[in-house]
Length: 211
Image (cartoon, rainbow, N blue to C red; front, side, top):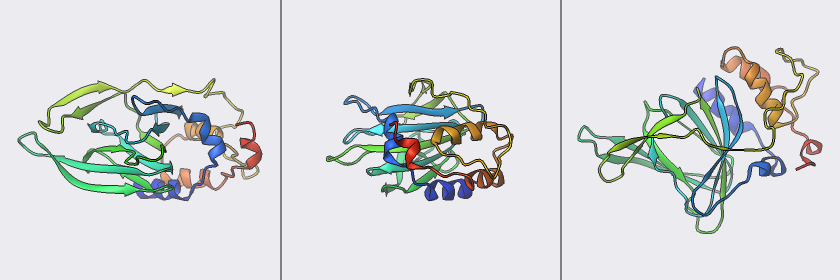
């Protein structure tokens, strides 16, 4: 299922005129911008100014997929030794449209924008959602529990649409918000259901004209 969802995210191409609705950059810190959520998943777009990085952190036993929408990202994986020290395991560069996956069984990590020239936007899918995780001091490995429940949200991002609980071949999914609503209706997050759902995704330019 992990690989199937990763492949699906890699295959999707989002028009910048749509996701720019969630483009909120600040000089002090990267921003988390809420696209949609329910009890099974959270979907966010993160905006990273030049050289902004996250702290080293875990994912509270959740699964996390990251797709770079524009710009570049750098992901550093760490392992924690018995002494508590965190040691670099791998460093990976992600370019636009590339997707990464992580959970706590694989590593803890930090991510961010390594560029001195441009900002970066990335799409993050967390399943199940979580509100707290641990950050790790890079020198001592000391961990601190932090709350990450705050995020920017567009006006009325959860407007209900009469999509129904079943997917109809005649109904095309023409926006990210429609996709969020359909994900919310899935009874079980299994890859077969998501594959079926993605068969009806068709993002038209007309949908993004208002953005």
